[in-house]
Image 1 (cartoon, rainbow, N blue to C red):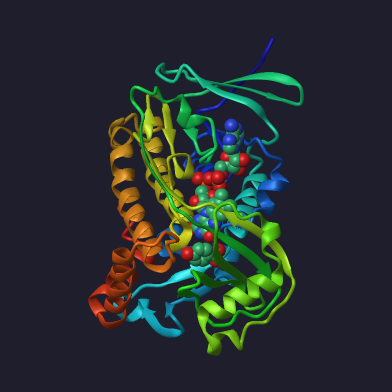
Image 2 (image 1 turned 135 degrees about the vertical axis):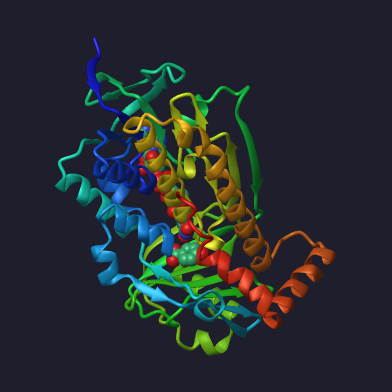
Length: 396
Ligand code: FAS
Ligand code: PHB
């Protein structure tokens, strides 16, 4: 016999989307319960995104979890693009009047979990066999197991924040769900090192050998990426090879500043563009990677998740407290309008900066023309800048 639990919003997934939604709903007086399949320690150990748009920072402030971010986050007013060693700065402040903050997703998740614990809010980790049911009724339920016991969580809304490999998206009937996907013929090999970054700002490098990215987490921690084959095992990339490729791909001036410290984390990230439509079915709503994936080149993944949640939290407050269903009815369409713009930008920046393996001379010439145009056009630099800092969060 299952143990019965009840809440107003059942949130599946304790990543940034689920935790931020839980925090915004709590501050609006709406009970919610978060279910997470991994041990929370595993969730907190993940190394993922590193760049926050101003809109994301505002939402974290609204959630009451931005104090450490403001103390430790690094404000960046531009990035550099390097092409075969020649560099051009994209000046966000001059082109858009805006900026981004470099603050790891790991830290965002820690701040959200800490706030949830401080508020004594329920977060059940190490759950299994999660199954949202009765989604077209007014009392959906989420069945799950934990500690060898069966549970039944009754609620009014199920928020699928369970990422690309979660269960919730699959609960939308195949007859209603449409998916769009593009898988790229390369991946990213990323390392984290206790070494001073090569530059004060991020450097995105295109070279005939492949893409490289010089990012950071603090003035003493670097986050470095090289384009690799999607099937490359981590073992194919010993530190020496990573540093050699980073140096060759960015050119000698920057390479001379590259501290070759031992990696303290190393992983391969697959690259895909993916969108599922709609982002709602009955009382199930999707947010974040559960509904869409972008290649990390444009630093949009985490920020898109936050933008979904900003919209969704307002829609759920209107529905559950104001008895107004309209914002919830509009949620999927409004979220997807932003998702597709971010998909376009992420696809464009990925196509611009990576070396595509198969010989396609026409594509290669177009790519070089695109890079030359970017280097010489304030208009094209403005397009890159306004997408990178984040399109306006139209939340109200
Ligand atoms: P997440 O995937 O973060 O969270 C989903 C949560 O749901 C997970 O904790 C998972 O364990 C849980 N879950 C799954 N199935 C469940 C179930 N059945 N029951 C309960 N819980 C379940 N973005 C960038 O902008 N820059 C980057 O450099 C970058 N690097 C990345 C590297 C990797 C390896 C990955 C996978 C993603 C990366 N991303 C990056 C994108 C990433 O930051 C996502 O956009 C962000 O984590 C999205 O947050 P969520 O939607 O909360 O999904
Ligand atoms: C990171 O610091 O992890 C990072 C930064 C910018 C990106 C992708 C990843 O585009």
